[in-house]
Image 1 (cartoon, rainbow, N blue to C red):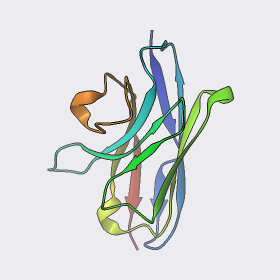
Image 2: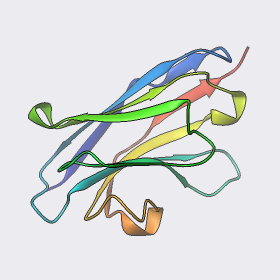
Image 3: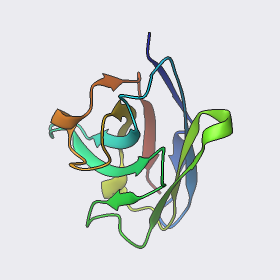
Image 4: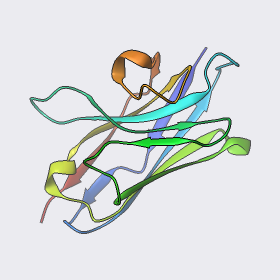
Length: 123
């Protein structure tokens, strides 16, 4: 069955960087996209970025455009989220998920979820 394992979270100062990794396995041709989502305390889970495992097309939430970059290494079944210029408001639990399409990049469109990795941006 589908398994997703996130890693790379931690504590970082504002303006710093982190690189999250998501190793995915057990999904077939019906799942052609991997997304990154986050959930802060008291808030709904929201989309951060999604990427096609086929052609590499991407989506970014407005709040992270220009700061975050999603990429994938299909040979290693791994998707990365490079997060630069981090802000305190980026603090959240970050989850990866697989879905059938890159867009819509939304929680409703993605089917299987990892356990999450915590990102805390604080001085």
